[in-house]
Length: 391
Image 1: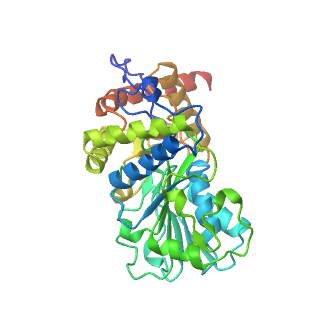
Image 2: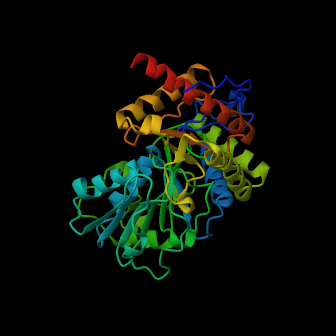
Image 3: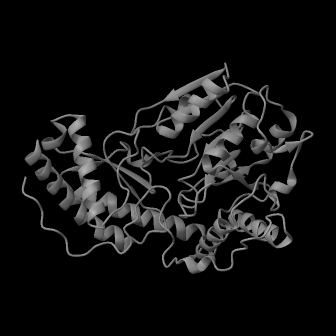
């Protein structure tokens, strides 16, 4: 295999990591100059800043008026664990799993919460489980977008309007980029470092009125840690949705997220964010169609993520030699592009099949993805040549 010539142009922003993701265009540390550092998070000004975060998030996401939003500890993982620990167990639960994080929620529900009436609906990487098999008389737990598989649900049409259970949605790589039908969602969580490229450790939880009703009418049979508690004396802690927090937030991180929210407002809000992500992903999708060596890990085009685009090698010179060789080639591609300063952190998730993963969210510029694709072709031929020499 003859190596391609090295492309002349490099992406201006080489950060294609799927979390933490790229900062918004034009970001500099100067945006943090107004951060309320050294101030108590319960001071009046700090609470006003935190309340501003909640209000802007609610408006930009176009949430229903009666949905509540709070900042909680532990990033998306902490937020979703909070939802599971405080609301599951009231009825049976269907857990959907098709990527690493879906498997994590299965493990937590079956092995740690030990909910006996738990049904697991699984699919391998690249596919969705049978959505028609979901029983909405039960609670339903799933990821809207499988960050580690690049597979998302195509829409919310499969979710019943007259459901009796609650829907619990890990939406961390879907919010602000994909069309979420909020009427079909009772609990959703995400973190700032995904679609908006914010800083780590802070999670967000979104509650529908039905979720609030569950919280105020049900007490789980297990002890609930303090950092997970959303109620006191059987009533929702309303202050959490007005700028108070369970534990201490970083006001530097708050300022950074606020900057991203203001940027989103300035470019046109949710529709503009979704359009940018769609246009970015289209660059990779079109390149895949023209490339003889790569394929989308997501089998069905209707389920292909527009944020965490996951790729697998589809070339006989590599696939004929087995998964271990595929893994070596993918790691070599990622290493070459990292060394060239072209693409950072594009290896597949550690538990996923061998491949590459390219973030295409709205904080990236389409021109950088245009410049990336020739480098991917160069890195493939160069990686195979290098590995053949050392084999």
